[in-house]
Amino acid sequence: MAAPTYDYVVVGAGSAGCVLANRLTADGDRDVLLLEAGDPDEDESIHVPARSPFLLKSDADWDFSTTPQPELDGRELYWPRGKTLGGSSSINAMIWIRGHPHDFDGWAAAGNEGWGYDDLRPYFRRAERFDPGDGSEVDPADVPGDYGSDGPQRVRANPSPHPVSERLVEAATEVGLPRRETFTGGLEGAGHFETTVGDGQRQSTAVGYLHPALGRGNLRAETGARVTRVTVDGDRATGVEYVQNGRRHAVEVADDGEVVLSAGAVQTPQLLMLSGIGPADHLDEHGIDVRVDLPGVGRNLQDHLLVAATWECAEAVDLPADSNLVESGAFARTDPDLPAPDVEFHLVPLFFMGHGFDNPDGSGFSAAVTQLRPESRGRITLVSDDPLDDPVIDPRYLSEEPDLDVLVDGLELAREIGRGDALDPVRGDEVWPGADVTDRAGLERHVREHAQTVYHPVGTCRMGDDDLAVVDDDLRVHGIEGLRVVDASVMPRITRGNTNAPTIAVAERAADLLRGSD
Image 1 (spheres, rainbow, N blue to C red):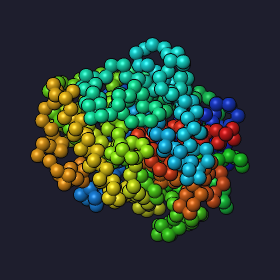
Image 2 (cartoon, one colour):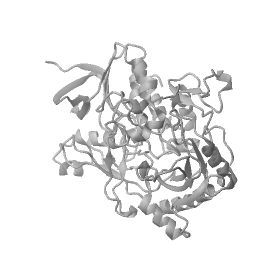
Image 3 (tube, one colour):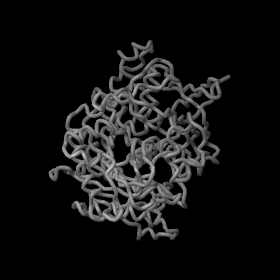
Image 4 (cartoon, rainbow, N blue to C red):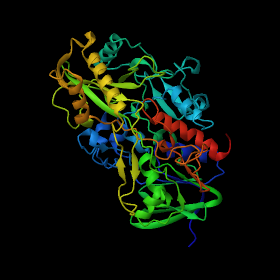
C-alpha cells in the first residue's frame, strides 16, 4: 500500500509542535500530521497547576539523566522533559517570561535576519491573551505591559499571591531591586510572575493551541507514535517512519511539503543523527549512513543551572490548587556594567530542594538563583543506532569557570534576600546552604553538591550560516530540502528567563515562514 501523504508532518506535539498544528491548519488548505510519542494529556495532575511536582518521573516525563558532571561532584543530573500532548508545557511551572530584548537582538546581530526583538514582539503578542486572574474581562487598552489580548495562550496575572511570596518580593526590593508589576520588557527587578494559567487550570500549548484545532478535517494527531527516522531521497526529506503500538508505519510528504522536527533540544538532534544528518565521524561510529555531514548537530547545548538557598518557615504554607507554586521572582545584574540581568531568582513559599524530592517535613521558603547566560556548552550524542535508546546528554555544566563565579555571586544575593527584614516574622533556621557556611568556598561547595537543571535546554540545532550551524534563519536544515527544525534547539544562545514563551514565539514565526507569509 502507498504511504499516506501530507503537506506537513510535524514531529513532536510540545510547546512548538502544538503551535504549528494550529497555525498550519487554520486556513484549511494544507493537510498536517502531528506525531507525539507520549500519551494524550488526560492525567488530572497536568491540568491542576499546584500538582506539577507530581508529574516529575511520571508517565508524562521522559525522565532523562545526564552523564556524570565532573564539576558537580560527578553527579548524574535528572532532566525531566514532557512526554505528552503539550510536551514540557504540560509539566512545567507555567512561568511566562519573554526574555530580554538584548537576547533576540543578539541572535539578529549574529546574522539571523528576522529574529531581533522587534521582529519577534508581534509573535509574542499574537500568542498571548492576558488574563487579569480575578475573573474579570480586560479591555485591550488596559492590558499591562506589552502583552497581547486575544491570542491562544492564556497569560494570567496573580491577583492573590501567598503572603510569604509577597514577603519574598519585599525582601528582594530591600536589596535594591525595583518592584515590577510585569516582566515584559527589561526584566530587572522583583515581582510576581505571570503564568500560563486560566480558569484555575494549566494552559499548556495543547490546551491553548492543539485542542481547539483537533476538529479540523485537515489535522490528524497521533499519540504513542515514536518517530524513528526521517526518510531522505537524495537531498530531500520525503517523510518519516514511526512505531506505534508495536507496529512500524511510514508516511510521506507531498512534493512541495515539509517535515518539521519539533521534538525539543534533546530529541531533535537525536532524530537528525539517526537519519544520517549530523557529524560524519560520530555517525560512522554507530554504522549510520551519512546523508549530510553537519558537525553542529547536537552541539551548543545550553541550559540554566539553579541552586537554592532555603529556610524553615514559621508560617504554614497552604497554596491553592491554581497556584503554580513558584509564584514570584526577580532579575538582577551581578555586575552593574552588564547590559542586562545575568541572574534570575525563583522566590518560592516552599522548600525547593532537589526538584522537591529532598524537601524536609514542615514549611519552608526558598530563594533559588539561576545563571542566565552560561558560557559552558555541552552536547547531545547517540549511545547507539537504536532509535528507542535515550541519547547521551552531557551539558558540561560549569566547564567554564565564570559560570561558577556568577552562581556564587547570585547565591550570596539570594541569601541576602532570604535574610531580609520583610521575612523576619516567618523566617526560621537556614537549611541550605546552612548558617555554618560563611565563605565563598562553602558556597562553591553548595553549588557543586546541589545545583540542578531548571529545565531550559536549548541550542543543539542552532540557526546560523557558519560551519557549526544546523539551520538557516528560515529554520531549514542545511543541505536537505523539505526539512526544518522548529523548537528550542534552534536558539543560537539561551534567553534570559524561562524558555517556554520564546519557544512559542519561535513557532509562531516559523508558521508564517512555512506558509510563506513572512
